[in-house]
Image (tube, rainbow, N blue to C red; front, side, top):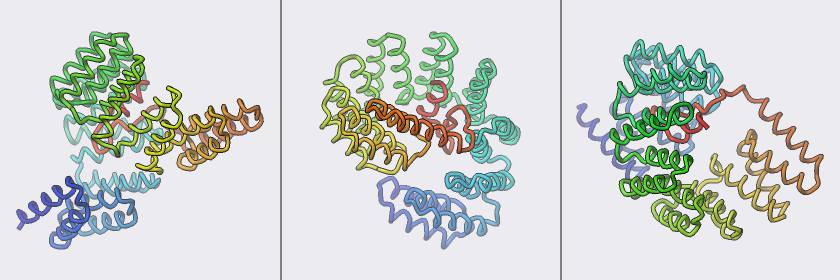
Length: 408
């Protein structure tokens, strides 16, 4: 019976929420065995496998799911497309996104995912065409409108961007991401009163959204209203006492206000809430480095890498630690750290340029020039990138980092 499948899927979701991964995976495999033509278990289990780094197994699972569902389930096609894109198989990902839209032309997530793929590969016109096609088949959709607005911002078509943001908020007036993206655009191109009004509208829609509290506070701080910014941070924390991202931003704000002890207090509170939030350790280490507490900074950088030494935050940590060691004249250690950063991300410009600057300070002008040349070579060897951050939404979940990135 379908109700039995629904109950098992719910049980698996509860197990995932309580970090019982093995139990959740076992339940999902049972669902696939007994209801092979239902796509939900394939997508959920595949997502779990990808998070565990089992890419080949996830790919095989998705392919089996497509066959079992006779190619009629757009969710599995889309999940496989995302996997292939992240694996660098862009051409195959396009084919799979196309298959998802053929399976269901009203599947907005597939149109959106395909458009984001094209943006990442510099095909702005193709991305825009896909988003408009998605709207034609799916009707008003906040995420499709959001991304269209972002494209218009980059093209300098601010009035058109406002039109799309208006439509996004009309499609879903409680979309915090739409209000936030619109406010960030106005902060760059509009008038301050409009920015504050949009932040306020966003909080009226979703009062507990930490991203909006943070963005508004940072806007006020940048505008010189430190007291207003502090009030917004405090109000945001009252509503979201366990929001470590907001608390980290609050700590850095206090440090910028010349209050390192208050900043440390916020960092301590944050790591008690979530010691696995890697950017916390990186930010705290940076503060201690700026304060001249090098051993403390090294300790926090090490704790950052203990969370993960393979992701983008690890790259940033290696680079920051390399700068520290270079300034402390531990040049061998600094070089090793810069190399570690570049092994993970050979196109990381801050790591290349920080290394080159250190070599120049050491009097190694030739080596510094070599590093700058290598940096340029690495940047030009990759496919030309879109000149804006298109990570505004992953699986239709926009983040403040991506939205802020396009407007910096």
